[in-house]
Amino acid sequence: MIIHFWELPEERNYIILKENYNKKIISILEEENYPWKIKNKIKKGKISIKKLKDIAQKEKISLDIIEKNILWIGGNNSKGLSNPKFPINLSTRRAARFIAAIVNDGTLTKNGERNKAYGRLMYDNFDESLRNSVIKDCIATFGGKAKEIAFRNTEKKKYLEFSSIMRDMVELIIKSKGPKCESNIPVPKFILENNDLIAGWIEQTIADEGEIKFYPSKYRRAIIWRRSLDVTPLFSGKIKKDTPLRKLPESIQGTLEEQKCKLISDEEKMLSHLGIDYIIYNLGVYLTEYNKVRTKWQIMITKRENLFKLRKIIKIPSKEKDKKFNLITKGFIRFKEPLRIKEIILNISKNKKPFTSLDLAKKMNYKQLNTAIKWIKIFEKEGLIKKIKESSYGNGKYRTPSQYMLIQDK
Image 1 (tube, helix red, strand yellow):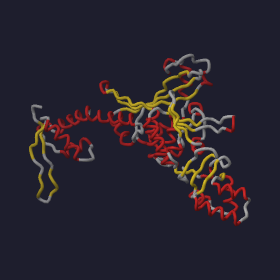
Image 2 (cartoon, one colour):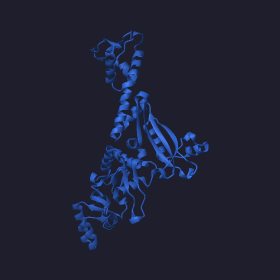
Image 3 (cartoon, rainbow, N blue to C red):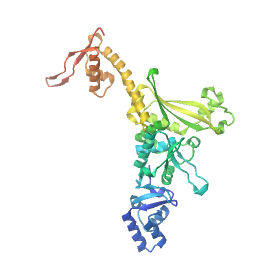
Image 4 (cartoon, rainbow, N blue to C red):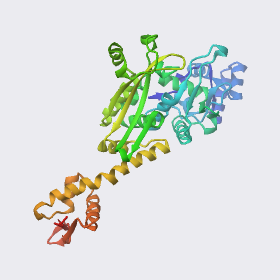
């Protein structure tokens, strides 16, 4: 997906052109005897998108050329966006992460009634590493500088607030304002069509909405995240307290199971597309402080090979959560891999049968022989196996690997 400057609200957004191109436009206006007022707007720097488009149409100036010469764009009284990366390409992993961040822990507020307020764009998270990651993804995607993104720091909230031009661009993508649990927004369609964008969305969603469960003593390792949907019109007055799904009347259970959270449905498609197994639960209903009724779903990703596969695909932008995910995969290797390899070695060396690193690599489906050699050395040192023949070269053949045999009293 691509965003061009001419797709943005044209009457409330202004442009400053690069100096050399600015002079070129002024010379055209002077030659064609344009009114002093219009020439003065360009000389002073800012001209609305609407007026610039009118000039381009009348003088047959390519909008693409104008786009390449934009130095700044934004509202008349806003920080705006310097050195914007027009045309803005949203089909990148970093763009997918930024959009996911706004959908997850961000807010695109509704229009206000006073002073033609068009809403605000914010991202709210206490994790500093995550806020910094969102800033970097924003700059890499749209351009600008970190100082153009305001940081609001209060006791209850720590959030980023973006300029009005960023709000206008994000609105083109999300096309919905207000709480996502009420508008039931989907994942932008173009993200569902690309594996790299899907991976970006998933890793950001785990960072914002997810939890890494790692309890080695209980053999519990999982990644989960949850999504909510407002169902007040269906259950207003019928729900008096937070209630798990199976404790609700059967009629209400049936109605809840028919509800579809578009984000959850799209994330199911994403995980299936990546080949990641998952389990999904409806957790029942809960009441908000304003007595609105909401239902919640949970996606859970577990099991050793499944988590290994996900680890190869994603890097969670939250330092704390990514570190915990690393502990999960290292924990699997430490506690389960040796047991499995020992069982394989016992099987392939039955009846005093010798074996090589090639045999072990084949049984373990290793892509590299070095991994099998590493484990053989470990079990040789532990006294499970012994080397009975060294590796050798010769007779026009490739290297023959070392042979090993099980020590029988083991």
